[in-house]
Length: 65
Image (cartoon, rainbow, N blue to C red; front, side, top):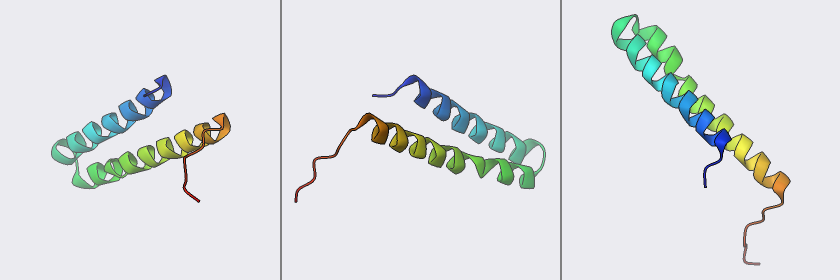
């Protein structure tokens, strides 16, 4: 189900989450909040890439008319 590309996005978002928690507790809360905003951005980009790849491959959903 997952492709190699998916693991890169998941790793990037998880790394961003860990970095934001570390920054929140160890450095500065504002830095942690800023880096924490990257997580949903990375995941949204991942969804966009997946939709684009599915559209290019010609996969259609079974829709009732």
